[in-house]
Length: 178
Image 1 (cartoon, one colour):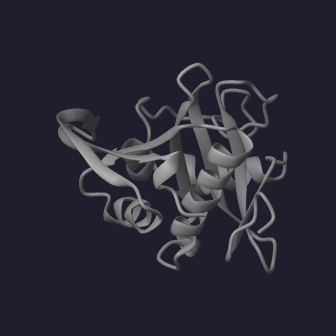
Image 2: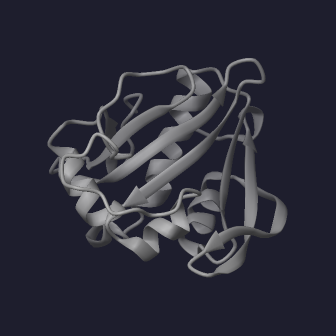
Image 3: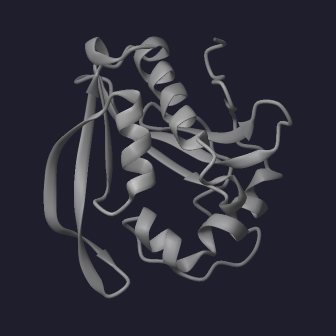
């Protein structure tokens, strides 16, 4: 497997042409965004420098990717390794797929490719996923890759007027099967 290519997806650098699509289909989905983000949703003008999807320079703390389909190269979503800690060699996974690409197994493939990047390319020891306990798609994708449920944080996320529980799933490099 090429380092950033899975069975169905490829991770690549974000392009300027990706930003308006990701903003329109992911950021402007207020309900979906509230479930994915710790930041409250605010209206944003097209092309705004405030876009969380904007093209940024690489940092040691985060690796942001656009997710494209392997065969057609179509933009399917975004993926991130965030809160990268080079001392403890750990990071968190973040991912969002455009609506038309959900439910097709791409999420599992994205998590696999992010693990390859984190464990093989960055030399991480631990990767974790924090998600809402009712996010069955993300939990299923994580478990298929080998993540284990570690803890539930009760009422840890404020989502559209109510507190919801979050689950933390973790995977160690020695447990990961490429």
